[in-house]
Amino acid sequence: MQLSNLTGKTVAIMVASGFDEDTFIAIQRAMMSVNAKLRVISRDAGLTNAWNGSGWGMSYPVDGTLTTTLAVDYDALIVPTGERHVTTLSGEAHAKRLMRAFTREEMPVLLLDDAVSILDLIDMAAPAIAEGSEVAVEGRLAIGRGAALKAGLEALNRAMIVEDGESVAA
Image 1 (cartoon, rainbow, N blue to C red):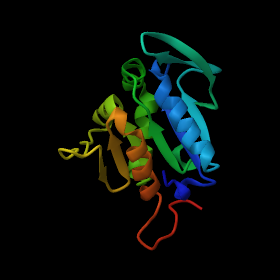
Image 2 (cartoon, rainbow, N blue to C red; image 1 turned 180 degrees about the horizontal axis):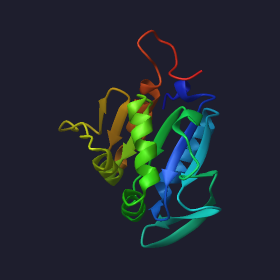
Image 3 (cartoon, rainbow, N blue to C red; image 1 turned 90 degrees about the vertical axis):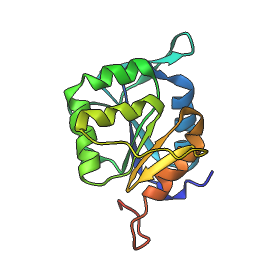
Image 4 (tube, rainbow, N blue to C red; image 1 turned 30 degrees about the vertical axis):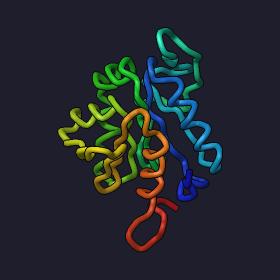
């Protein structure tokens, strides 16, 4: 997986309790492999809980709360899959504020599976995933199906580059 454009970048992963643990761990590993700084942003302070298949998974430390997080402090945003956490984030005004800031400033965003519904909060339509494809990209917004994490992360990596070949954030 080629993610070199994420090297040294600070990437926010926006979650609430109930996010998919397997996806979260895979994202963590991918970011660690390129020395990107993954920061957990949640409505929960302290710890947030993952969902692992049919029950609660591990608790993970939160780096920043949604109430205090600013998009300008990050180079990209990832919202993983997980019905419980997406439902919670959908009712969170600060998740809406943060999503609107990332998209307004045309910063790279990756939404996986049911996390795409968060775009409804900001009255933004999701790009359609073509038949036979795993991801869709429109500008710096990438969406992917759950099984398409690798393709989604690669799309986010490509979104880190602007037209002149320079990285989105220095």
